[in-house]
Image 1 (spheres, rainbow, N blue to C red):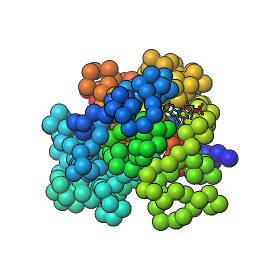
Image 2: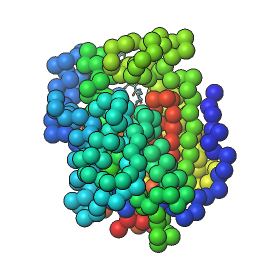
Image 3: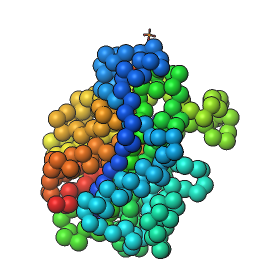
Image 4: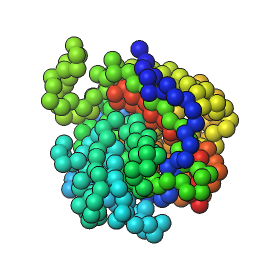
Length: 340
Ligand code: UT7
């Protein structure tokens, strides 16, 4: 059963936190569909038709999630001439941290020598980046923080089972970073949020840890991502479509009001089905799975940054970021774009 308890206050949020800079990074090494043909019984035609994925990036042996996150932040600093020295908080969304402790956020803090800030990792799988924006927005709205670094970064290749053709064709590595600050112009920023979770389906996609099972569901302890693709697929097209529709209804937004829709890039067929069910035009969907595969917490900032780089996203436009996946959890944020 779906739990939408977080959504009792559908009033539009006032005085928002806005995205003021963005950057991204993907590792150099490409893994194409024909490379995968050499590893498992699959083919380019099947992968493209069933997922929309052509290739993905794979981190080098010595490259870990913190390295990708740091490179994404550096890209942001270089392009926007911003400083991260004075951020109040670093929030890293990741399912593939370098270590369980310390978190990736602490490694980022050390690398940039940020003198005084909070540092947390958020583990909400493919909903991690949108969830982190929700948290950052809350900290800024409360007045307790002025400037927050939010990063989505993954090295999923390090936990992918390259003998399982149903999962290894999907996943890739990458990172995207944004700065969030109070919207001083009063014209933009996060204007709505939505979350819903169905933990009873959590065993349908997992990366095992300490416990041998989730409830009565035993987990494979192989240190690899395991999923029941068909069940996750069904949940995504039904429950995620319903979640998006609920969110839009609660805030009085019509599907046509959305200029850009940035869903988690799980599978192109899932995105198409969500668009059909919610009434959001497919042409407004920005995705990153074609070139990068499913990069979990990094997929949304990678797709967003690509669109920002080519000038597609303009001030005043309404952008819906919507993450969904492991948990099974969903998180959406609606942003009135204010960045030039
Ligand atoms: O972000 C994390 C959350 N995860 C997801 O969003 C994943 C959601 N699920 C999916 O994207 C899809 O379910 C998959 C891409 C994983 C699989 O696509 P599908 O259309 O659901 O395929 P299927 O599992 O129904 O399998 C259809 C057939 C099977 O063969 P038979 O039993 O019909 O003979 C599979 O064995 O396709 C076979 N198959 C493959 N064939 C060639 C499965 N994987 C492959 C493959 N290449 N890589």
